[in-house]
Length: 279
Image (cartoon, rainbow, N blue to C red; front, side):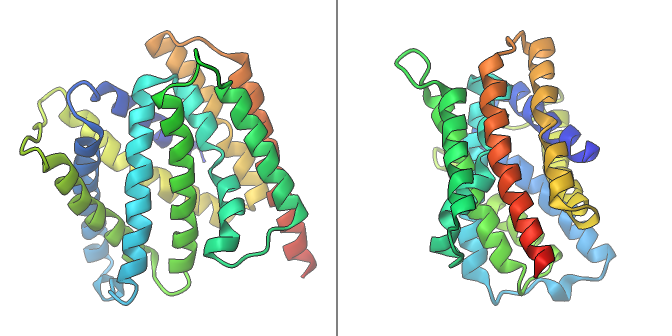
């Protein structure tokens, strides 16, 4: 979880550092290019190319269009609003899974899940405090990215029933590289890396993969009820980094709203875990 927290924070800072040189489509294109090199190398070293199959090509496409959209919104948000606000709104993603899973996965919406979603919505209102002076495109992008990340999570869950992690990661980087090339090159102008920006782009590509690798392994080692509270440490970490690096103020209401969002997440996970043990 230390690796996951560090990687997510590094990716946010690196994304902001290159935002004046690249648009979000270009950042995603370079991230995916670096990612596919790493993933292909690991698949080759492990002799796992036979695991990269095409039976679920349509599901891979839907998953990665959702993730590509969410990641572009996330990179945009980190450039225009305080980093702590972005991370707080991103934490609503599991609650959107609760809301959308009956439609996509056919799962039942229980009272506890509904209450968790309601708490998440209250937390969003506290973090965003919507009025004419506080609402902006950055807030909207951060809130929307959580919805697209939720769709990504649900289609990832569907894919893990038949596909290996190697297969999922390969299609993640390959499809999003193609999407990035199309989106970044639609105007015939793609900015090239410089000696200053290349290290940040490499950091984004490596940190994106490492963050999810560390988080996945943490969930494999320890229960979600242990891992999720540790993941919440991302918020104060990124808030302090935002204050030190970009002179962003520490907004107490962002922390209050994020805590309510966390409470909804944790309550749902705790109840689900107890139910699983009982079965």
